Amino acid sequence: MIKVAALVALGVVPVVAQEIQPITIAELLAARSDSTRVYVRNFWATWCKPCIEELPIFDTLARRMPEITIELVSLDAPADSMRLRAFWQRRGFGAVHVFHLVERLRTEQIDAISPAWSGAIPMTIIERGAQRIVHEGELTLPEAIELIEQVRK
Image (tube, rainbow, N blue to C red; front, side, top):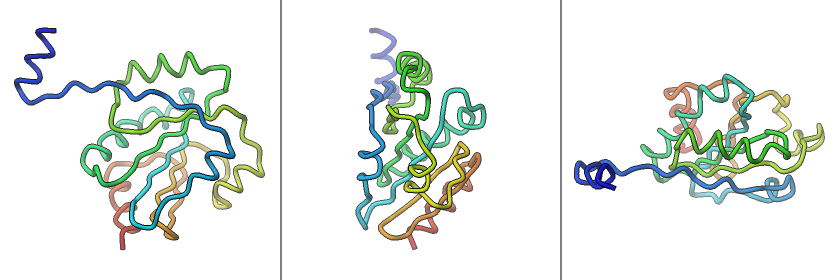
């Protein structure tokens, strides 16, 4: 407790990892962004090394740009929810919203999420209203910021 108090006194707020929320494909498809806010939705998995390497970027974006919404959607197998939870608790990212898809994705569902998506991960959708950019592959922080700025125009 003393360590936490000392950190707070120094202006450092300890981060508590977000709770992982289960989500179905229907809920995922129904979740649409409003026209004024930028949404960044990343599809990833714990077994995907490039996915893991880019996770800190999304936490940084959420802290630097609190006006945008960052959603991370795990594609880990539905049966792996406990392993996913343990993985996420070790990371300690608290500024992002984390979801676990509780169903396996099929090709037609991938197409419904984005016809531009091959199904490979990591994959990130950055959108605001009707403006949408789909990026397959790992993102760097400067690339992510540039894509966010593009949908803001």
